Amino acid sequence: MVDAEHNQLTEEILLALGIVFLIFNIFPGIDIWISALFYDGITGGWTAQGAFFNAYRGAFNAVSIGLAVTCLALWAVSLWRGPVLTIPREVWGFVPLLYILGPGLLVNAVLKNMWGRARPGDVTEFGGERTFSPAFIVSDQCESNCSFVSGEGSGATAFFISVLVLSAYIPNPSLRRGIVWLALACASLAALLRILKGRHFLSDTLGSVLFVSLVAVLLHWLLVGRSGHRKKDAAGEV
Image 1 (cartoon, one colour):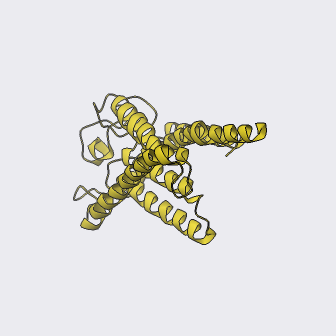
Image 2: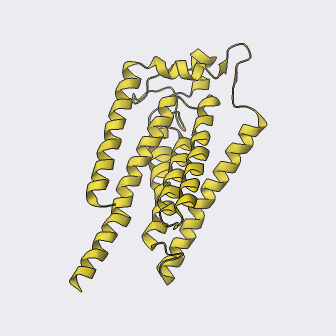
């Protein structure tokens, strides 16, 4: 992507964040209404509590982490021997760094430990003892590993973006599209499960998608975009 494309994507993500912020703070009841669709007030249970959902969650997380670790290893190899599978070293490095900076640092280390938002299953509307607070508003209802934003939603977003970036180097268009759509479906279900389980509100998930997407665009520009410009400039000088 050239600078203009990165700039456009950044502006679009910031605009989307602003829209989500306004909607869920002007109409905070949307979160309660959506979560209530998956909550049984009689039994106190949530929709996605079966063995299949738990197995899927474990399998997806294993594949996602495996992708990051594999790319980290191939990044190390590419630094030593050059491009692996025709994929530039900067692209291999993009994937593990996205996981570290997005889901790892921004989401789990900073936002989830600072925002203080109680999870759906812990608020009084769904049988808990905590007070519901709107998205993007710092609260004191949780001390650590809180609801805003979704950790697994951020991991699912990092997974999809990583597959999207890597798939650009697949020469077969049909295979490339098939892989991208499969990754999107798998990542979407993984993020949705956290809402169905009463562990996150819809705004938590949307926030995680947008925050990690913003990190991805900036990181891609730093690693891949600027590297491409340097190579083009060097080629022009020759």
